[in-house]
Every structure is written in structure tokens, then in C-alpha cells.
Length: 586
Image (cartoon, rainbow, N blue to C red):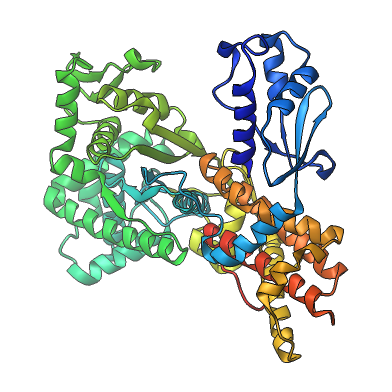
């Protein structure tokens, strides 16, 4: 209906002569919003206020001109001018009742649309480094990305979900040497574990499995491993230099091939754990894309060659640089260091090049807030490789603070002091985790209250919304148990009998669902759907408490059952988009 109102205003504006509103002053878009107060109608527009200055007319007078030029519409009961020049639209009750009929007719399809017109979106999210289990911060990325993908599909986009596996570079070398050192401990060697190694218990588990498979074949003495290494952090040294020296020593003692063997074993175990964790969380990916594969299949070399060929890369002091300042970045970026080692940015450039080659219309990234500085350089790389700037979009997800008993839990993969996503799901359940993660905007910090998420009270939005859905099932069960007949068509024809304020509020709320889904998808804002469902549940519970549904009057009963069923369908549809179950009983 919002689009219809916009079209009415566009027709009215087009009908106004040049001397009232000059053509060059007419905006390409017209803003129409839902009103917060029903006394102001269902929709309102500030078009007259926006045009008044350019038209050199009083905004209320201009609003009157718009209303006079506006064609009639069967769903619009009246149009009023309010305040300084707002145009308010009041809909006939029949327009809201038609939405209820659509809910029952379309069922699971209600709220879905084709505004995306089948355009392709590559959605990359989570992409946590495969150096340990997923923690609660990664869980927010997973819930946000998965829900965003569902919303985009609901409005007609073709979405491909991708996880970028950072399985190359220095962090992988640290993972390999950390695993090997834990393996040596199992073989009886004793030494101080490096400050910059991965210290979580999961590394010990991987090392145990490794030794069970290969025995003591990679055992070396602690003396040989640590002889004449630089000082570690605990001895006043540089922890980065120390771990790099350990990596070099491991490569010397067991060879590059066996160190790679250790890495592949650790990587496979961690990646399998991540995949299982996400799958159990209801998060699926169409492709797991390997960073290492970009090097092995020559993608990085091809992307860098393309940049050199187009003049967007240059060599200086033995290194290869990307001329990112030419595209608005604050400084040029190194892609290959003077020692020949490629930077992570080189891989990122190659990954963008690969995405462009696959023909996606929109490249949508979900990153952590700490990656804000990467946006300008990666957009620059995309443009330099021939991609349109507007196809590149990044959504940043702020950090999560997990509170248990009033104490904040610390999360650090390297130190091993973190709360895993799996532990969180065990404590509060998938449903609470999925909804709580997206109940606030992704660009706002999230304080995750474990006690609230696990509670079965009306203050818990998950319980409150699901209980509304289950309550309808209870009503329908009582209908059957009492031997009452329900005529859906008669109920639809009697909707005008639903005149109580609580019933009207619920009907109006249900009619908002399609535009809520559209808004949540286009604004990349799943939290707006959460807020809508909570408001819908509140409207249902309020109406349920105020008015008996299974009354003796068959016509009124049918109408009220139809309204309850419509509420249940919309609740189910919305919860499904959020990845949350819709239980029949509570």
C-alpha cells in the first residue's frame, strides 16, 4: 500500500502546472511513511514541505494543491492536511481486511516479494580464521549474515552464501607450530609454551589425535627445538620474533612437507568443527572458499598482473604496491613485500577479482568493526579491477559482550580464554541465540544477557513471541475439543465485526508485515523484524487477554479465529526468516 500512496502523490505532482512547481524542483523520489499515531492516519508524506522553498509557496497551500490534483483510490478513505503541510492518508477498513485475506491465502508466501528481481548477491559472512573454535562474537556474525541472506531471498534476490577460509599466511604457520609443540609435550618433552602460540585446549586435542595417527615420528628434543632462539616475551624479548624463529626451526627440524602435514591436520580438524558448529546453529553456506587456493591456482598472480597492466600497481624498493590513493584511499598499499612474500591484501584483491569474474551484481561483505580500515582499500581494488563501485557493500558488526552473573567474559582465541558459540548455544538454545544476536542493529555494541536469554518470562522476547504462536495452536485445539465448527470464508466476510480497539490494532499490525520485511532487507536491518514481531506478539497477547476468541456467536467467532490464524502465520513467517523455531506448544 505504501507504493500505491507514493504513486498517488507522483500522479498529483505530475498533474501540477509548471507555475506551481517547476519541473526541475520535482524530486526523483517521494517519501511516504507509516504514521505512529492512528489519529494521523495510516500513511503520511512531507512532500509539500520539501517542495515549498523551491516552489516559493506556503507548504500548506502546496499540500492543498497536491490533494486537489490527486486521483481517487478505492483503498483510501480520506486525505487530510496536517501541521505545517503534512499530507495524511486514512485507509478504509476494507484495505486492512484485505491484508488478512492475503495472509490466509498466501500463507508462507505472505510478506515475500520480487523487488530484488532475481539480481544476484554474493554474501560473505563469518569467515573467522580457522585457528580455533567459533566464539560468541563470531556467533553474532553468523546470525546476522544468515538472517540477512534469508531477508534478501524473501524480497526476490538470488543469494549465494560464502565463507572465506583464511587458510594461508603467518597465522597458519603459528597454528602448525603450536600444534607440533603440543605434540612434543605428549611425546614427553618439557618446555615453556611460546607467548604468541595458540594456547587453547583444542590445540592439545588436535595434537593428541595427530600423535594417535603418526606415533612419535615427528618427535624432536626440546633442546634441539629451542637452542639459541631469541628471547620470548617472558624473558623481555619480542614474542613475534620468537614465534617466527620457532616456525623456522620447526621447518628445519622436520622439513617443510611434514610441517605442512601438521598444519593440514590441524586445519582440517578446526574447519570441520566450525562447519559442524554453524550447521547446528542453522547457518549454511553454498561455498567454502580457500584463500590458499587463490595462490595455488594462480588467481593472485593474475590479479596482480592485471593491476600492473592497467597501471594501478608499481614497484618501489623491491616491493609491489597498489596505487590505492588514486581511488580515495589514504595511502598506497603493499601487495608483495621486498622479500617476495605476498600480503593479506594481495589475497583480498584476488578474491575480489574472482568474485567479479563470477558475475555477481552485488558483493556484500559482513565484517567485524575492527576491519573498518579495510573498506576503502578493498573498494579501491575493486574499481581498479573494473568493478562498479556501487556493487561493493560492507556491513560492519560490532562486538559482543557476554555477561554471566554480572561478570564480563573475556574472549581471545590465541590465549584460549574465550566462550565458544557451542557453549552459548548449549546454555540458552539456538532460538534465543539467533534472536538475541540480531535484536540490536549490527552497528551497535551488543551486551548479551545470558540470564534473560535463558528465562521463560515475558521479558524474554524469544519466549514472548513464540508463546503468541503457541497460544493460537491452543485456541485451535480448544475449538476442535469443544466440537465447534469454523468457517474461514465466513470469518473473512465478517471481519467488519472486529471493532474492538485491540482487534483493530492487531489487524493494522499484520498489514505492516510485507513492508517490514522489505525494509529489513533493503536497509540490511534484521533488528527491525525482531521489533515488529515483538510488537505483533504484544498486540496478540493484549487482544487475547481482552476478548474471548471462542464466543458463542458463530460469525464473530469465525472472524476472531481468522484473525488469530493470520497472526500465527505472520509470526511463523517472521521467525523462520530469523532462523528461530515456531513451536506449537510451550
